Image 1 (tube, rainbow, N blue to C red):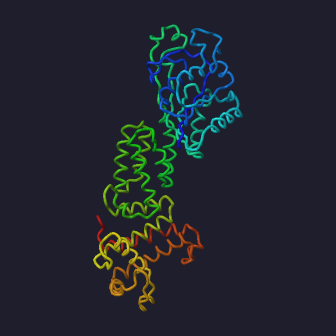
Image 2 (cartoon, rainbow, N blue to C red):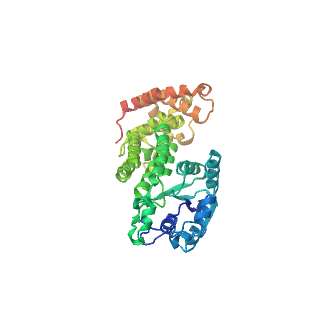
Image 3 (cartoon, helix red, strand yellow):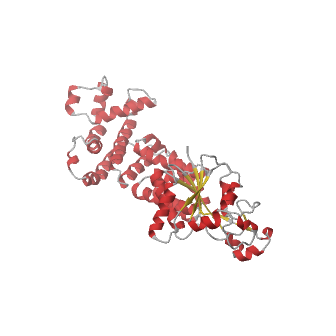
Length: 439
């Protein structure tokens, strides 16, 4: 079960009581009180609150009567007592950390915080009193944890007490005159780091699943981002599994572009820029049923160094186009199962050796189909495309199966890479000469 985790650092100042915008009717001495009341109100005993304290922070602000300069009775009450008064179901824990005045201390704090995280945790981070370098390394820590433990930053909050003025001036005012300190949502700063990393993987390596994971946020309630996540991951899945029908349909790109447009309206400018970059990278796809989507997917796989997928898609696409060209002679029927069988038929037919045809030694889906086989075998289209298709097929088998059928398996991968476009393009040119692009 996914655990929600609230993480906060306790400082040493004698904090002034005020109200925060997250809960403006409830005056608090510590910002943690306001954030926990707001964020953790529906949490259960399965979730957890961690308050990280140095020795001084524990002495001055965790326990009661820690502050020596008492200005108000409220100053006597430490955070532990005030959390007890919240009557929340979620357990909390004080965790000791070092002062952070050396690199060794910083790494010790890193290990301490990281050690409290469990696989899949959803993190709610209060950065208000995180001192010295902690705000900086926390983003690195949570990014590291996301990679190793699959954790996720749900929110980053900052209680901006300074908006009310200097603490000594605010303290002079009656509580009701002090105003309401805003709570700033800094989550998008962390998300920008994730989006930037994932967008880099998308642009440079063609990987969309990581970007999809970054967009998913079950607690955000942001349907636009959830939908965007679902549509963007489809490209990876369809390419990996050779789903030419889904790729050609273009539904995923239509949803993707619609969601990018909607998401761009509500996101900060840096994230909008990344979304536009992603949209630009998918510009070869069209939001309709069109063969251009398959050709764009083949180009995508090739240009992002997914050579095995590029050859597989290319082979399947050539077979698909030829089977549709000869759909009128399909001997298996007209439903989806029959069309799939006919594609297998065409694939085997294109790879038949001459002696097998002469001897009419047919097996599998070719068995008992002598008339159709001989009819197609004599077609100019088939005779022209066969040797070029064979180049694609053998190279694809060499990459995927390593079966030694084609000598390229003993040569450098660069040869397979360099050969791809010339042989693939020649096949498509032949097909287009005999056929019209499907729309």
